[in-house]
Length: 146
Image 1 (spheres, rainbow, N blue to C red):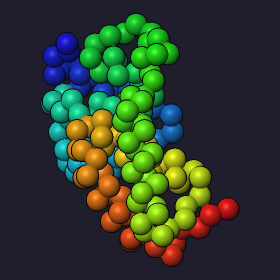
Image 2: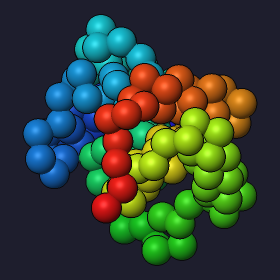
Image 3: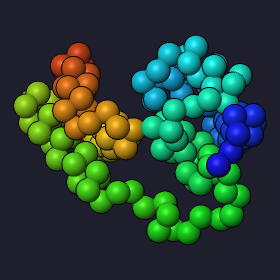
Image 4: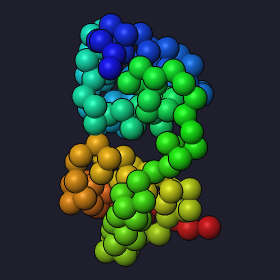
C-alpha cells in the first residue's frame, strides 16, 4: 500500500498523463465531491478508496496503479463486476422507462457508467437510481434519440 505522499504523486502524474485535459472540476463532478476536495487529495494524498474506480476510469490507469502496483494489469483485472454492471443496466432501463425520456446511445452508455461508478464507490443502487432520476427529470425535453 502507498503512503499519502506516494499516492499524491501518482494521482498528480495520472491526471497530467490522462487523455485530454482532466480538470479538478471534472474529477469532482465524476466523483460527486467538491473541487476543493479534489484539491485536498492533490495536496495531501488522502483519497477515500471508493473514488479509485472513477479515478482509474478518468485517468486510464489501472486500479492497481493507485495501490502501488506498477506492473501491467491483465485484461481480466480491467473487467467490470458483472453483478454491478447488470445492476447499472437494469437501473438505467428502469429510470428511463419511468421518466419517459429517450436518450442517444452514447448518453445511455454514460448513464450506465455513472450508475456503475456510484455502485462501485459504495453509494448503493437506490442512491444511484435517485440521482439519475433527478438528472433525467431536469433534462426532460432536452434529450432525443437518433
